[in-house]
Each structure stands twice: as structure tokens, then as C-alpha cells.
Length: 126
Image (cartoon, rainbow, N blue to C red; front, side, top):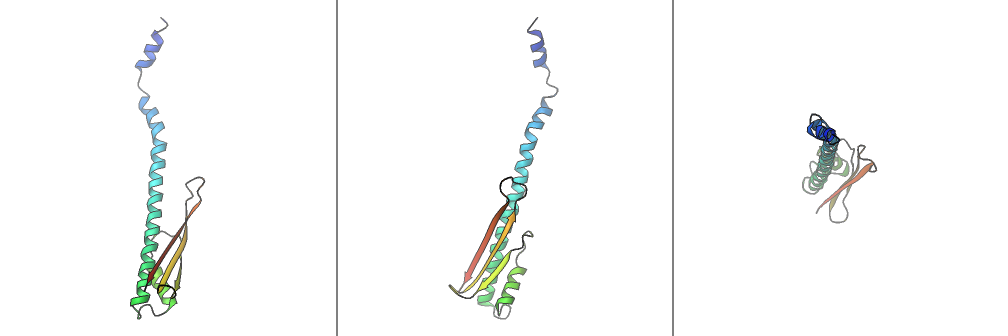
């Protein structure tokens, strides 16, 4: 008689799906949000690298479009198409040739303990 309630309890599976869903769903949402933020971070970094490469090449090759530092930086800003992280672009004609660099901070407000990720990109075209 004492084993009867245990067998009866083990035979009911009506709430098992709800419990599994409640255990798995937060982890799934966290992984999905992390993948989205990682994708945004990669897109921002790649877009900064593309912009500085285009700006350095324009300064070295195209003297009509990029005759000075101001127009070179404007050209570089126009080639940045990533998320709104407000990268700061700088230009210099010393060192290896025409150097364009960028720096920005990508804010990760969703991850506890990591508030921001610094991003930098630089390109030099002789």
C-alpha cells in the first residue's frame, strides 16, 4: 500500500513538457541574445576595418576625392555602415604612408560584468 502513491505519481506526465520548457527556454533566449550581440560586434568591427582601408586607399590613390585630411576623414566616415557606435577616425601621412585609424566603444548593456568592448582599426596605404 505504501508503494502505490509512488507508482501513481510516476505515471503522470502531464506537466513534464511545461517543466522542460521552463528549464530550457531561459538558456535558449540567453544564447540567442548573445549570438545577436556577437553578430553586431563583428559587424561593427568589420565595418570599421573596411572604412579605414577605403580611406587610406583613397588618400594614397585618389588625390581628387581625398586631397587633404578633412576630406579623407569625411570619405572614411561615409564608408562606415555599422551600428551607431560613433567611431572616431584619425588621419596621418607619416609612417608607412597614408594612415587612417578608428576607435570606438561597443556597449554591451545586456552582459553582466562586461559593460563595453573597445574596438580599434587601422590601415596604412603607401
